[in-house]
Length: 159
Image (tube, rainbow, N blue to C red; front, side, top):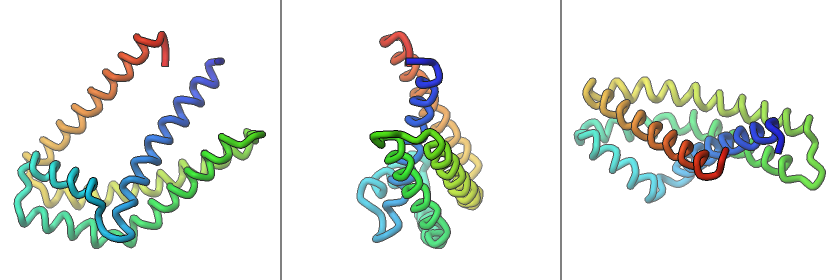
């Protein structure tokens, strides 16, 4: 494969991971939280030592913002699905793929802006120690992900 195709493959995979994350996150809105999301959230709350009052405040925060988040998450899902269909079409149209990629990027950007609003409000509920611990947890996850990518590159001679 040419370098451009590898770059495209990595970008599509990264978008897929991002869309999958948004889709997973979006599933909580229609009829309440799915058990997997509740489990992960409760596990995170336990690791951070979230108090009962903080739990109530954080859950209220997300519930109060559902109407803002749901259309953005749905937009990401719809635009991601449209891009996947164009990529997998029998006769791919590069211009249409670029247009759909741009639209998905804009949808992800809109969702990210809303997520930043929620994150700011969530930080105000947490103690400074919990905010720092959460930051360290994110950095550790990123480090593990980076190490995994490095191992894949070493095993396969490239990624």
